[in-house]
Length: 147
Ligand code: FES
Image (cartoon, rainbow, N blue to C red; front, side):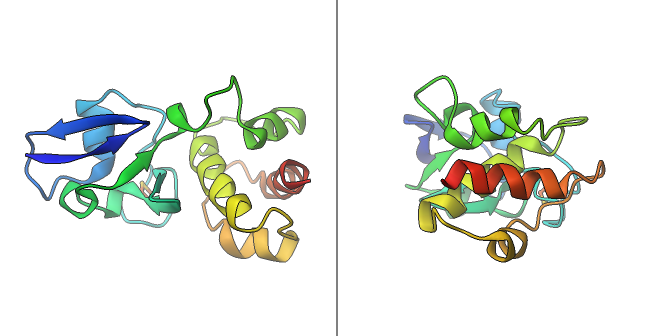
């Protein structure tokens, strides 16, 4: 049995401890906002927050998060929208939208550490991939959310 917290709720998974966190979240907890893109840690579609840091959940086993606090896009904000989500909407960042939850989670973690992150820091930290090529609008939205 593996126990940790997801979106402020205690969870217990009776899964192989080596199960990737991504699949526990999606399949066992039905938190499908966390996306599967590459499964190799490159695209960032699966980004969640683990103990205050952005992490690629396809590369983390549930055994590694025993006792940790995990937040997914569904639990990012107790309000209707997190400031990063509001900024993404205001700037109309999304095209197909598949990568957006991962970008939002990565951006929220960055802005918690550095609310005034500049373009260089945003581009260096948000290494997620977007096949639609929305990078300039992501930078604009993250800067807007940090103000
Ligand atoms: Fe995890 Fe691509 S699905 S980084």
